[in-house]
Length: 87
Image (cartoon, rainbow, N blue to C red; front, top):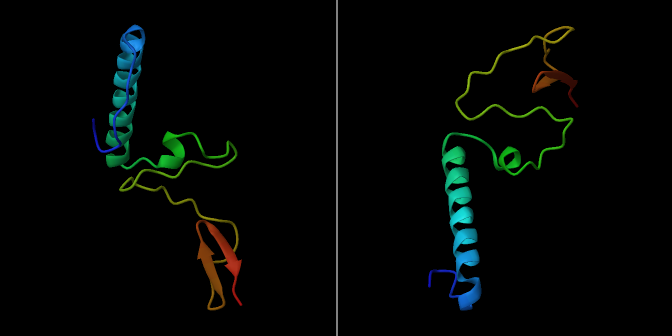
């Protein structure tokens, strides 16, 4: 029994259920470690659309790539690496 409750497993499925629980526990521990290292759930669970570029982990050095065009003026703002006209 744990915080989620209890489960009853028949004798003939005990080995199968025990192995599955161990695999799940290992997978969850790996995810916790990767999250602590700065990876995003979006990437860990493969939820990001393929066309999107992955976000670097927290604390990673981001390489600045200048955009073509002028730098932001008083009525422009920068979003990521794109210059967008302001209101």
